[in-house]
Length: 80
Image (cartoon, rainbow, N blue to C red; front, top):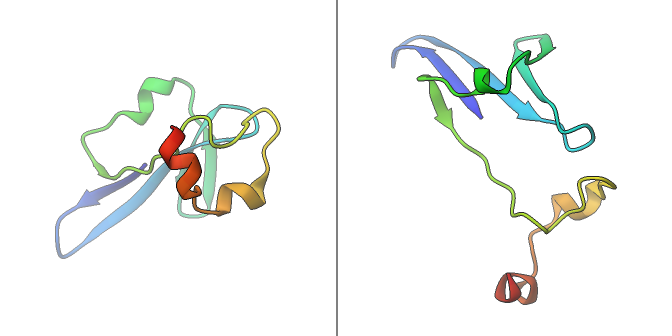
């Protein structure tokens, strides 16, 4: 999830991301990355863009990063 702080003419972006390997949330701010102490910290009034990944498409306990980069097939989408 990306966040925007400021106004249309000026601002600052940060992002939250959930690791596919350890299921923990991280806060990315410029060159700094830190773990979120509380997952509720991810919910902010500054949310700008949300990114979703379809459940079941990838095994998060054994991530296949090449498969994650691909679009789901039409057959998979029809069965979901």
